[in-house]
Image (cartoon, rainbow, N blue to C red; front, side, top):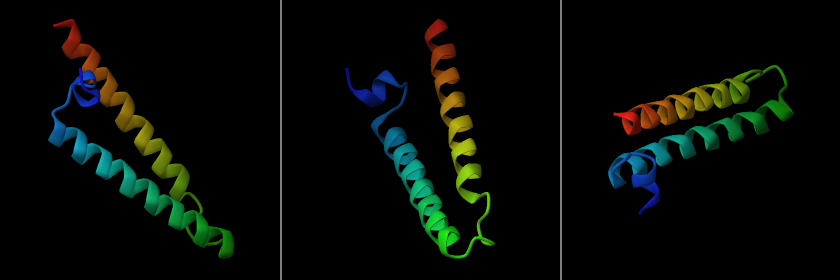
Length: 70
């Protein structure tokens, strides 16, 4: 079975999800680099991004587990 099917998604859903996560992480990384040079900027951006992604993954896994129970 394929990875995206294992996670309860179609290929296109998985593609969109992975692109979204990847772009958010790239943006958070750029903000961290800017923050390293200018500490008054983007003080919580990376941690906010990680928290948001954690919630997104938890919700996705919860929905997948709920669908498996039905």
